[in-house]
Amino acid sequence: MKESSEVRDPEVVELLQQLIRNACVNDGTAESGHEAMNVEVIRDRIEGSGCDLEIYEPISDRVSLVARIDGSDPGAPSLCYLGHTDVVPVNSDNWSRDPFGGELVNGEVWGRGAVDMLNITASMAVAFGRLARGGFRPRGSLILAAVADEEALGTHGSAWLTEHAASAVEADYVITEEGGIPIETANGRRLPITVGEKGSCWCRLRVRGVAGHASAPLRTDNALVNAAEVIRRLFQFAVPANIHDAWRRLVGGMSFPEEIAAMLLDPDAIGELCRSLPDLGLARQAHALTHMTIAPTIVHGGAKLNIIPDKVDLDLDIRTLPGQRESDVRSLLAEAIGDMGEKVEILWTHYDPASESSVNTPLWDELDAMVRRFHPGAESIPFFSAGATDGRFFRRLGAVAYGFGMFSDRLSFAQFMSMFHGDDERVDVESLALSAEMFEALPRSFLA
Ligand SMILES: [Zn+2]
Image 1 (spheres, rainbow, N blue to C red):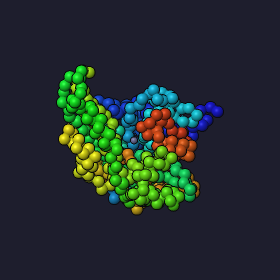
Image 2: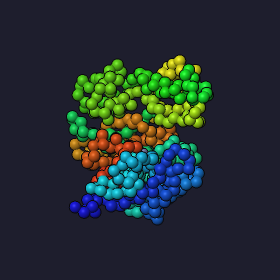
Image 3: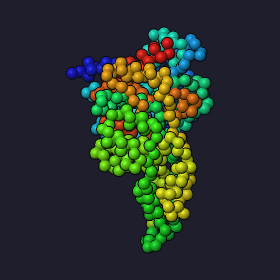
Image 4: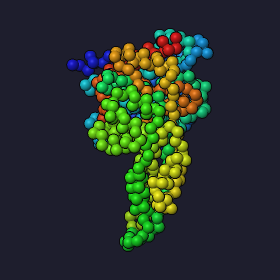
């Protein structure tokens, strides 16, 4: 079969390919990302379609685009499509194809960002362009925000926009990543609508030692050895489980066997269940959604090969649950590190609390209707994410923010989950077409 005959919506496929090929890789530094390139591609698609369009560039090359179709009734609820244009770095050795090739192979577009979230951003932009070109005149305004820097802290993207250009992006309702990937349960298909997300507390621990000559290491106070012990303690610390409401709702919607469901909701049983569950994807999610998690990710230390290091910096990615505060993180760290604490100093933290939107909203009902329309027989379930999205900034402005897109059943939920920030990221062209179709249909009813 020729590739072209498999593609139901070539426009969204081509846009995704271009976005992938631009390789707007955000490594966390201000000099990375270069989202100006992806914004340019999106601007080309929608400019001249009759919408208003603004470009924001808080620092060089970190560009976000905000386009809007103004509603006729300023009092009517507004909707913002929020898509990021940056991607995380890759280790191309582990990929079967060029991570920035944007190749279309067997009905799948390959490349970094194919599921996180250039696919959704592309579908949103194509749908928005079609609405604008078609002269769509809603009662409530429709906004498209294609933003930089989601993959770091949103500093040059959503954090900046919601602080410095809030009136441009403010909306009553926001849709962003991640959701809509079909989950097959004992009672049928479920489509997750993400209503909330964990918080993140990124911090740096400075582990001390005493410098000395590495030719005589006995009884030296080596910061690297101390750091290893700190990591071991953090890794082995039994973080208590926390069964919160969003988790209860999620478990309730998943139709697990009764015995498993009971264990998933039992704070004394869930830890052991997660350690022994054969389904690794489920185990990780279940654990992450019921525990504050601590993952050491970066270590810097040592100055010269023959010197005993006197300091090692250890960066931790800590994720918090609803209701947990920065002080809870600090006390948990202190408890986990124990008597090594005298050698450890917390240098800095960046704290973003968990955030959540209600499920009792008109947008929920509308998305629920979309789920039934695109996947007859399926039901929506409120999902909670272990990761962070730009949705949090908009929830803080008072918006209802959900993560959602429309996906086919070609790739499983577990496959999708493993591709977020993983290797061989790809998406099927049917999912791209479904998302574009849904994002075009939604405002016609929701903003009418
Ligand atoms: Zn993302």
